[in-house]
Length: 248
Image 1 (cartoon, rainbow, N blue to C red):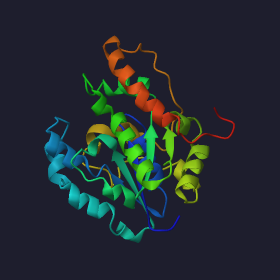
Image 2: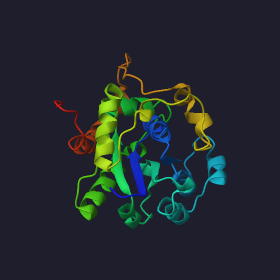
Image 3: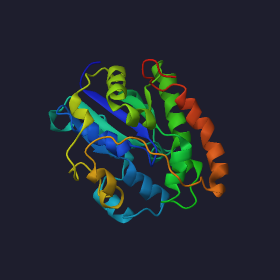
Image 4: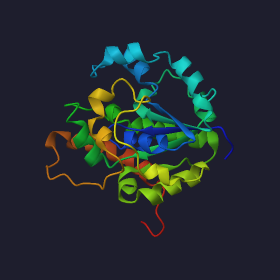
């Protein structure tokens, strides 16, 4: 892989996307960006998220300017630009051509765990809120236009074996894995969006990836229909995930 390298990591909510941003941000050769299309998403959809007005005022809401920045010179002269992207922020009116100018990768999570977690923040989530359908759309665009299958990692795999999974991801992206990706200082970052105070309390306390946990709470019955909608999208991407040696 030649440098500079711009990595667009497409995720959905309630994954480990912010922890993964911490991981890449702890590399000395990497500049990170936190959900750069969020302000545009909020401005265009009018969705009521915590601090929405503050997000729109504090971040660039013009997607064209955001894309120009994401594909332009990497800030601070770093060779790697890690872009934490929420797939549902890539609204239909945004031209997809710029995806061909970055290295796209995908972070997924079992929808049973993700949907249950999301519902604690959004009482009545939809498929669009999960980002899964948008992840598949972006994945297919990249595969169609790039001629190769972009790397996909599953959150549970990363939590169970971060060293192996991050090594596989780095190999797929053409960069060396660094041990610095396995731990980071606690606290907030200047690179965090202004929404950090609403969403990042747990991540700010963290210093590494945590082992996955299994919820003892039963899955909400009223979300069963949504779960069934999500599963095919998840399985499409899960079939292409990076696998540990000897894994299933």
